[in-house]
Length: 337
Ligand code: KG4
Ligand code: ZN
Image 1 (cartoon, rainbow, N blue to C red):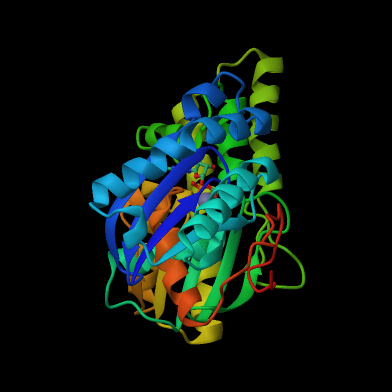
Image 2: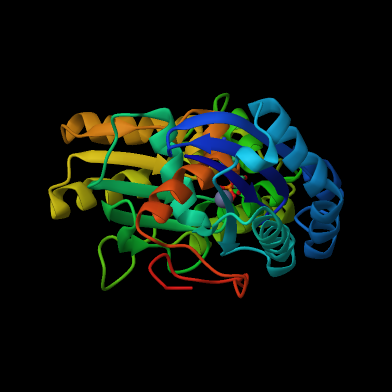
């Protein structure tokens, strides 16, 4: 089954053709990052406009690269939630138009389900159940993947997402948007014990996380140094921040493995591209004798191949939609349409 998938939830216009949930025939990503960088973050209005301009070309390119004509597609899939509402609407309406004109089923895909499914592409042997650690710009969750379309969130952030904390800390340090990768690069040259930063805990659920206090601690460190006229050693602050994040994530993953008894773990989301975090998750899984799946960097960030992969399993469950499908800015991973 060949699925044409579309993703436009944030600042990437993406289209892909994916066969049977595991084989990528093509994957095209048009990034708008350069333009948003001018403003220090994603400007929703600009994102929507750029999606409108790019979507026809990106979808055409995906079909051409796959060597598949429109009529040879078996279904159209699209990210319908969560994300920037104006951005999502571009993809959803385009997909609805294609589905109607081609008379092919329309498959709505939840963005976080898609991030998890990136692992099905990279690792053909991976099947649920497993533990997913979703680390993205908007979401941070520990999820029991019970089946391809059955999820239970067992832990998550109660404030900022991990990627958000990276980007805000980076911005305070003077790095361009998106700063996650800048911190990752600089951390490699810094001293992780250079600055003392907190590892916040959350009362109530030992799998819960909090990153806003850590971000504030970075801001305070910068402000205090400025008041004292002392220059910040940026690479040390980056290394110390990254070490704090790694410690928090390692602690929660260790607890999640022990609590659930699950010995298979898959990372997902843009932040799972982070070199320090990848090494930290690997160390935890080695210690806990669990198998860790780390998607290749090309599948960590937003792309449409992951949406096409998840769409196959949604279709198999009968999760298709009629043309009343709407986009949603927020939607739980288990919430129905
Ligand atoms: O999953 P994603 O592409 O979009 C969302 O669904 O949110 O994640 C984007 C996030 C951004 O916050 C970006 O800074 C972060 O992933 N990111 C990184 C790295 N590469 C991307 N954060 C830390 N280290 C990296 N190497
Ligand atoms: Zn994403």
